[in-house]
Image (cartoon, rainbow, N blue to C red; front, side, top):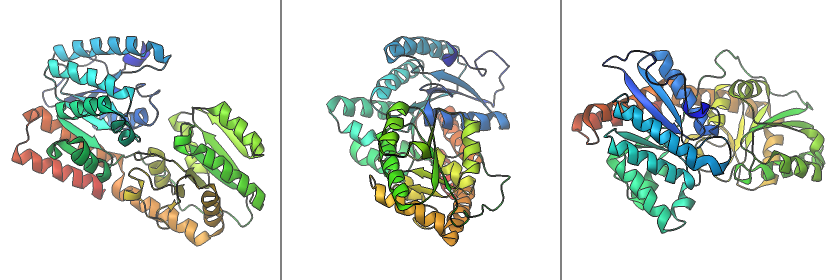
Length: 400
């Protein structure tokens, strides 16, 4: 039951009239929810620092067997109903990805609606388009969820446009907020390029799957080895670890690849600070937080133009962007970045500048709080004054 109980649970401390209390309905809570849990954790930490917002974390999926997920969801819905019935929450923040996540989050929305608590639906799903277009049920449940909530938060303009044009979501309720992260590189100075002929230390932090391009990565490693480029790659993340470890052995790069399995936040940050490059050759994405963390630490990024990545990164300036499923292009980019000190330094410094301008967690939390306050003050209907506030908050998030 740890996943639905949190140190921020109700009844621990007195509330004040001006304090916003947010119930986060999120899969796997903060520790078992992958990128969504990590993003939620960063927001909660920032809210805790300011003291203006109190957070209650409810796990909608659980971290055990999928067969137990409905039972776990039922307990979570009961706990949420108890919280909302006592008027202990200002807003429910619903994190949703795709597939079964929509069914679970529709149940959360239904309970919140019955108890008259406003909701924010935060779309994280990298494969949402494929899910939505997969059949009439997916389209119906998606439209129901986005129509019933008070606000929708998306990770980029492309997602907003798709919701408006294809899902037919009311554009007035959609807010674009790019992800944000803590400043992993706050105390780091200039990152020196690798020495000529040095063993390149490459980093991958992702759930191991083809959606994250792990097969493409390993084939690129084989090409690097054939070319005589010395390297080591650290691969941190859950998923099909054994399958990809076997694939690395088949490709002859087992000795160059270190599979760590799932790692925690602090360990991930330590690797970001100590490696030469971050590789993320995904086929689908939203806006990966690991990329933003790398930017903050001046760690050059090699990635693909999927999701909101091409909205925020520029090839050759703030990252190297390569085609999807192209192991040769990935190998070429690693060699190029590792052996061109001017390019390496440009990616490191421009990436850091972009982070400071656009992805600082403090600005993100303020923008999110503005959205909550819209609903807390006026329900789900927009007044002209609050619509102006929302636009200003979204613009501030993009500028920072």
